[in-house]
Image 1 (spheres, rainbow, N blue to C red):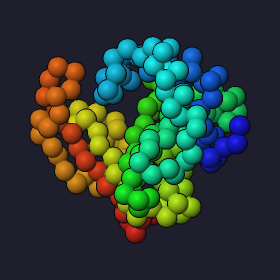
Image 2 (cartoon, one colour):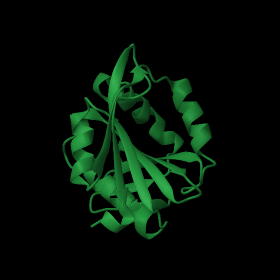
Image 3 (spheres, rainbow, N blue to C red):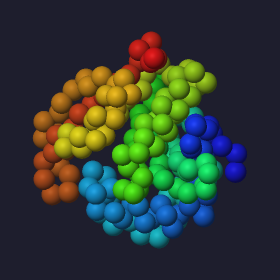
Image 4 (spheres, helix red, strand yellow):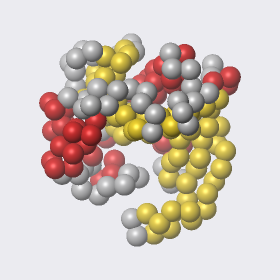
Length: 178
């Protein structure tokens, strides 16, 4: 499978059917699902995801493209980076989901750094954004470490998993990157 990009330890590429068992496994980890839109992620959910993703090309406006993040040395799926392309190709929104066993090891930072570089240099994006649950300190810290600026704190703006929640909105301009 042709990679979208490689970093010192990682290969970022399109999802394959072979990735789905690991994908289902980490999406069902309670701490991974805590800040996501799902509670239980089934094989049927994964099949629907794959069928939606398979025909997509990276950088297709008005689409969410999920990038599989695999460790280069053994091709183990560690997580994924989501990229929402919008605004006639001028902007993109980022999200990330990583297996608990592969968190706090720099994989999310390394993969997002590569995706950000790709979006700003190869695909000429003007601005990148991200929205995170205000309780997700790890995601907020990661975005800030990557240079994103917290632009808003939305208070009780989303009814999520049975309660009102706060969200942080982040932004990064190409002119601010590096």
